Image (cartoon, rainbow, N blue to C red; front, side, top):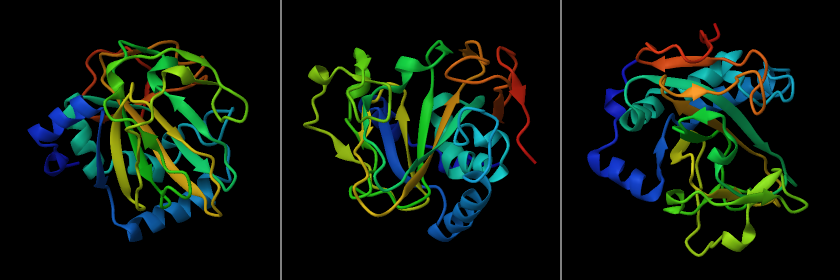
Length: 250
């Protein structure tokens, strides 16, 4: 797969390190995303997956269109600009926020991930249109420079933990509105959040997590992963062998 044409510029790399995110970019045109969406609706959201706890987790391991979305040239080219040539896809999640879907509180992902060292790059790719009205992701630029204390979430939130509300300053928060097929990349420490979906429209998006073969994913059979979890090499080579690996689905 040729990803060189989608490389970030030096200025974009510097902006990512300063702001904690980069984008949005176009991964594929809306009509191409229409075909992906039809298959995901028909084949993924209606079936169990490799993680027995949820059908929305790690469907790139058993469903080729999910794998293909996470490895589109426009995505991987930019991921390589930030992580280098050797890349593991270690997790995906389909965020399906139906009308009435709960608020996701302000949080930093790395607080609960089993990565040693904590090196990760995250993708958020819109499958449906994501707008302020149907609860697009909100981010706080520059908030990745400090790891903040998390506490048990207040009632009515979708996640079990949130950043201590006393530490959250949303003055500079922005809404990451995305058309179908658009995406952004962000740091594992960037503060992000989404409101309750008070619209009458679903908001489906794909989150994908990338790391390098030098990172040890601690105990792949335990929470927050699952028995049989494996990584997929999506660029370069793995000469280290820290982690359980598998091939992409047929």
